[in-house]
Image (tube, rainbow, N blue to C red):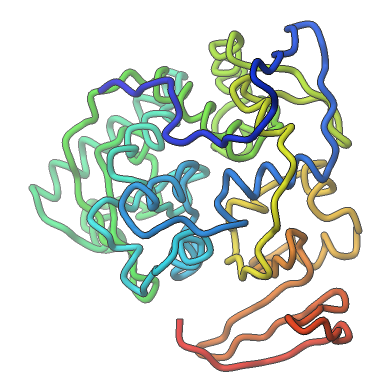
Length: 351
């Protein structure tokens, strides 16, 4: 299976008839505002995409984490117009154990990228993945089964079945209420290194500016494997300076970073683990400068959702059954210009 190096979508803006690309030895410098504006635009958070399979694929360009019940659905709702409670089950999408062995929703045609792109280079680790996949395939014999039941019947720890996911032969369905149901599929026809390079390319496009170390953390792969992928993309990368240090972006994204940002969406409720704030280390400082607020968003346990208002994370939210509680960190303005004090509120809704 071959994937074009040309992106599915390209941000356009007026930057002059013949924009000048920086040299490989120069460092462009981008401000916090430019970086966050770019990330919101490529993440379709400023303006929702029209309904349809291509929009779902674009919303899931770097995957949609689904570790919390229906988190991927809420991420889709923040990015695609007309999303319904069944959007996550669209025939163009599939679930798998993706980056960091977390549950992810991705476009079905992109499954090789999010599986083989994480297949270990280490011989022992790769053998473990292939052996787990082969044993599961032989046991299931075409059946679908809750992974806990399958693991116990095979005499293995059920969580060990996740090691088979990077082979691209294990897919799942998790509705959030019960154990994920797993089954096997034919092995994708794609070179694992090509898959990893494409995974790195997508990471840079959605999370950039970024480093190989940050890519390794997000993907759940060895730092050395991440560095090899970045080296393979060297001709397509541009070094940049950010408020939190040196990093890389795709050269094809330089013009979009320079774009003057349009209006940000009034508000979005981003679920726990949403792509927009799926960061670690210094990258969190860029997104949320105040240490106190970072501690409230990236907790030591389950992360709350993020309240995105006017392009800035302005609070957190949590859901318990049909009750949603929102904690705003600052005064919020209504459509008529009136401001409310920072406060907590609760409401009931159907998700």
